[in-house]
Image (cartoon, rainbow, N blue to C red; front, side):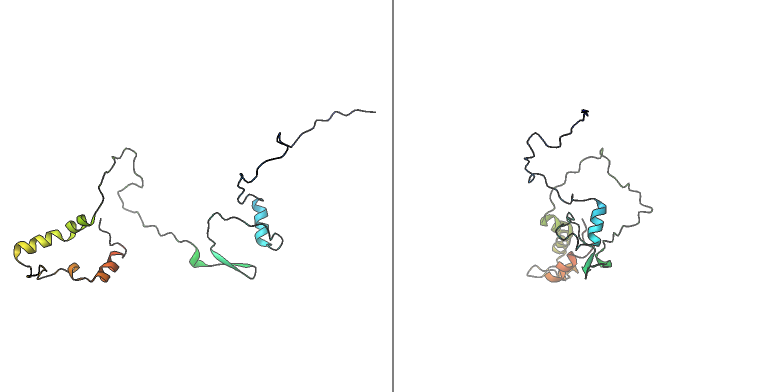
Amino acid sequence: MLNIIRRGISTTAAAAGKHNFRKFLLYNKRGTRIFKRLRAANPEQYPDMPIDKRGVRDTGVTRGGQYHEIAEKIPDLIVPSLEGCKMKPYVSYRAPDVIQSEFTSQDLFNAVYAQKVIDDFKGGNLNEDGTPKEPSEAEQLTPDEAWIRARKTGSDMF
């Protein structure tokens, strides 16, 4: 009899295969990209294999087993042209810290209305009830119109 020396490799761990696999979150790790592509093409062959998309939204819908792209669902990035812009696209780490207090409603009043109220008071342009005789455009707005204007694009002055 001829003895053949073979080297054996053990694939079991020291714990004899007793591992708590609930600790190991295996999101979307079952299969290669090729497998996932095959599954997407033939979902009836792999019905119990959900593919985790990690929060990414689809850009289309599936109807009758066919995937249809919807152009409105594809994100469109609108980037302004920076030609002629003297500012650099980054902030240096050496830039000083800007410390600014919270912008309150009192600050907003002082920035927009205070000077006109002072001028009206000094000039005698107030009615007996304290309302201005010649109100500005902003003072004539209704609360609903002011709310709509405040939410328009580009309305933030500060």
